[in-house]
Image 1: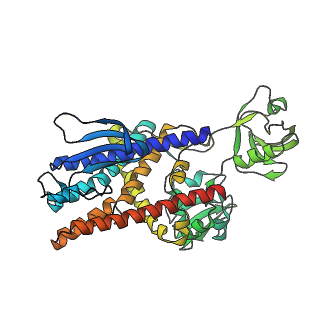
Image 2 (image 1 turned 45 degrees about the horizontal axis):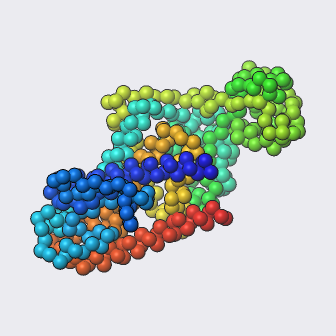
Image 3 (image 1 turned 120 degrees about the vertical axis):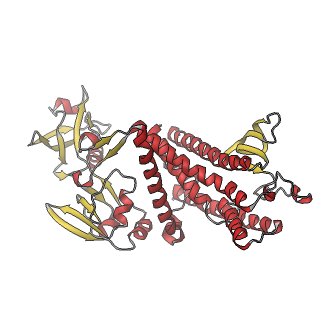
Length: 439
């Protein structure tokens, strides 16, 4: 329950930030062109608001609703999801959205998407400035990778060390590392001391989505970091820096396999194969009833040659921009899979979004995920679906090109159709979450 609450709190906070900035973009562009904004709300206020405030000499009511699933900026004279058509009963006023030139209305509608993208760039720059950036060349992962069955069908084998991806060195810590391998034409690996070139199927991403079993994960050995004072390991003369290579004679290049194997022998005895200062050892010891022997493992950056890069403020700005642009390109590229059977089955709602956050609060991961969701929100909102910003932008581009303004009645019908489409998509996405949860 605690994990659920932590993830839910992170999701609500992230969405609150993103929605506020998105609507702020619409608000500021509207005010720039002297268009009246009736309401600016964080969260929805159907049936009432927790807080509302209207400054003197302001036409805008600011508030916080009770339903923490979004927010809105109600622009006077605009057909939106509220279907407020009262303004249609009077002559257009200079302060109304519908009275402004098409290019101004276009910028007002682009404001939300633009601000979400800029927010992502600022967050990415802030992350690298505050926490720096870690890089791990894939050819330095001496234990190689663990591959799923669908990856092995394409030619990969557990313990393969990835040397190059399409002829280029790869950073295993880069956000797009796995995608680059899946979408590559050729991947060069080191396998049992030999270099081999694998030709990746052109439909590899579809296979991965269909299999729903992932693609690969980094393996790193269990190198003992510390020993509990009263643990079985200390009593049987294990030492810090010992590297566990096998359990009961079975080779285990990844610490997760070691942990699982030890736990599976709770209340029994195991035989560990170790490397100590280059010398192989074998030690047999009991496992307590909790499935532990009193050891902790070194983190990955203490096992492999992880490079940590610090950035000054001036260096962080272009680094943040590069990461944001790269993330945007990758997400846009992946959008094509949404329209495939395999991709549609991977769609998710609030449950999927919440699962992206860590189970314990970590500010670095929180801001990284918030930046990614900001880009995702920008891309989704630019889709040409009526009721989304992209739908309004499509109609405005039509007006600018043809110099014909669509009637308010057409806009209302389009808005209704768009809302119906969005409602069905939300049902489908959240239904997928429920199906996966109870499957």
